[in-house]
Image (cartoon, rainbow, N blue to C red):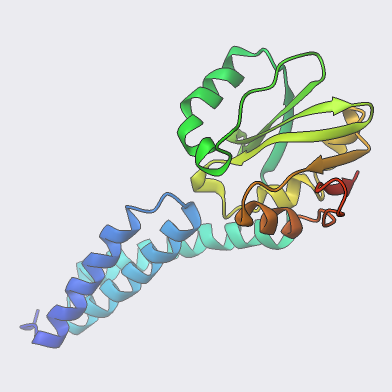
Length: 213
């Protein structure tokens, strides 16, 4: 192993910083991308100082990151993959525990959210790799579903769960007797989201976005 120059050391520090930064990411996609950059930078550092252990380790790490990123981007392109939605009872203890645990994050997007109750409530647990990844809750008037909550866990917000749910995943609504979905945007970000997942813009009268199922 040769002595490292100031430039080489700077590359090593940059690689270390990227690895540490990746560990702070809540988004799985961002974690993988930054980790890939870190491993590529460490690989460069290993080559410069002629260190076979560093080279071998980071070749392996980069390969693993590329494998998972390939899977992630395949899901984003196809809109499905390991995404899913399952109907859950509105009085389910698991549902209420899930909402209570994530309530601070939920209310940061929907400050006035309150869990609806009654026989007209439709709740869908959104899943990624068969694990809970989000929640959609609404109340049904006839065959129209009015959305009360559309929430995805921070680490899965790059998985396009909403795009999947209101696209390929629509049959789950049809199975619940829904022919139309309506939602009101409470923030500019929410407005952008609803447009992005396929809702028609609101008219002047109702102020509601609409999506035909």
